[in-house]
Amino acid sequence: MHAEPIGFKAKAQAAFAGLESEPGVRKPDPILVVDKVVRRFGGLTAVDVDHVEIQRGSITALIGPNGAGKTTFFNQLTGFDTADAGEWTFNGARLNGVPAHKVARRGMVRTFQLTKALSKLTVLENMRLGAQGQKGENFFRAFVQSIWRGQEDAITERAEQLLERFKLDKKRDDFAGSLSGGQRKLLEMARALMVEPELVMLDEPMAGVNPALTQSLLGHVKDLRDQGMTVLFVEHDMDMVRDISDWVIVMAQGAVIAEGPPDTIMSDSRVIDAYLGAHHDAPLSQEEAELQLQAAEAELEEEAGIEHAEPTEPNEPAEPAEPAAASEEKKEASA
Ligand SMILES: Nc1ncnc2c1ncn2[C@@H]1O[C@H](COP(=O)(O)OP(=O)(O)OP(=O)(O)O)[C@@H](O)[C@H]1O
Ligand SMILES: [Mg+2]
Image (cartoon, rainbow, N blue to C red; front, side, top):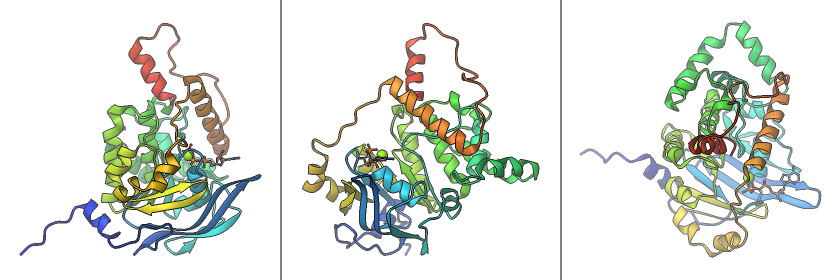
């Protein structure tokens, strides 16, 4: 009598049944439709995507070798950079030229390859910033004003619920700078959800994450889909791609070169060729990672209009001889 309950994954994958595995293939119910998006840097064409559609309610992986243009493509779509050409629609409405914080408030958010959390703000304060959308000149001012207008109650309540879901509630009043790399990734994902998005774009959610947190992060990504959100994520870890994605899109040299179900894509010779000799996950040195992190923080602080008050972390241990476990943690935190 009763139909078998269909799992979320099976339901998401059913939407792709019968589609051709070819670049630009039309989807039955796309939430995002991209046409002829080009971004050049001098003589380099970093992105040249002819047509791509993201199916609503699914988890789509965007893969490709280093320098393929994945992050640059995310930057165009989410208003963090200005494309030289092209147009794209989200839920049928054009998004070209819409600034990042407005894109976020329309329901399309992204996280960063290099996690952006404000070290000198607490975890809860970082979450409340998320409610304002991302970036934008009035980003921080709006946040401060909302406190005085007494609007923070609903925002704080939502932040606290999300922190609990991401098991960061005990860190609520800690400085974001004291979190490990994996916890920062969780914070960034939780913060993105403050605007109650429909489409969540994750740029390398697993990069630099301690294996102990990997399963938890994977679970959170699947949860997003199971709660009705659409997920588009960039990842180099093919095990993760195979495990959680319903559909895979491959970029190389700025263009989409293949699309299809995970198993089809992983055995596609064009994909293997694009990766062979091109992909390397050269780990950053601790010093390089720390420099990159500082640069990202400085950029975010500048956007938020925060003054540089103190040169050192408030809860940085004084020195010397750290035990092995502590220095591991520190290494991860800077990754
Ligand atoms: N602001 C910029 N100025 C000049 N060139 C840039 C800029 N941003 C990216 N590029 C170049 O554009 C190309 C695409 O870079 P992008 O970071 O988008 O690649 P990616 O696919 O995200 O790579 P990875 O997997 O290593 O993160 C690269 O050649 C990169 O050097
Ligand atoms: Mg990238």
